[in-house]
Length: 190
Ligand SMILES: Nc1ncnc2c1ncn2[C@@H]1O[C@H](COP(=O)(O)OP(=O)(O)OP(=O)(O)O)[C@@H](O)[C@H]1O
Ligand SMILES: O=C(O)c1ccc[n+]([C@@H]2O[C@H](COP(=O)([O-])O)[C@@H](O)[C@H]2O)c1
Image (cartoon, rainbow, N blue to C red; front, top):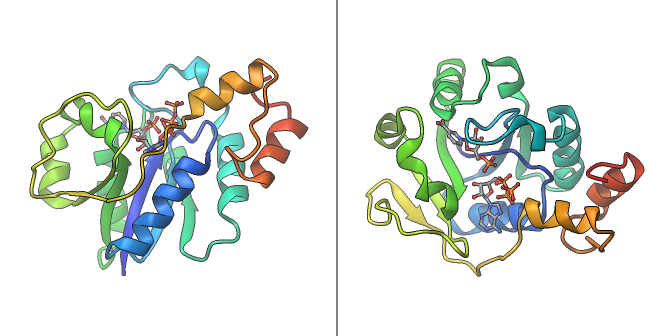
């Protein structure tokens, strides 16, 4: 069993995340994708993030009907901000027989050299990377541990969705219906 760990803020989870995870399961040797909700990305301002419990609820709602997807709140119980190497180390010690890999959009790869102990991540884990529009140049494209997923570019982001909500524009089809229901009933991002 090889599990793709898909770390993210998911503020909110959108169809870009879901398509990426689905293509990854269907076109690579990953058997499952685990969405790991990060309370606090070390590079993001806390004030722009919805509470992690609410982001977790939206991820649960988005993935409930896909048996290949699961969600983890493990980083809620680890020190913050959420450094990926620390979570990986914790998970590998807890599940020594499981094989883990990382799943990410290419924009994250462009800043990967600034992540805590990124060389150690590359030494022990493979990275499955989904191409993303507007990604700056970076030096990881040819790295032997980096595998590109061939799939259509999806020009959608959580930032854009939050903007639409604030401006009263529709987010239909950008998030799944259960996620939209949570956003409107709980007045997230309004
Ligand atoms: N449209 C997309 N194409 C490829 N990868 C994506 C896309 N949207 C998100 N990702 C990837 O999903 C992971 C989680 O991203 P994140 O939750 O920050 O979403 P985001 O849309 O980039 O959010 P924000 O706009 O708030 O920064 C990251 O690895 C990111 O690269
Ligand atoms: O470990 C690090 O140094 C590090 C630096 C930047 C981002 N990350 C993680 O990368 C993930 C992607 O974040 P985001 O906000 O783009 O969804 C999230 O889980 C962050 O905690 C991790």
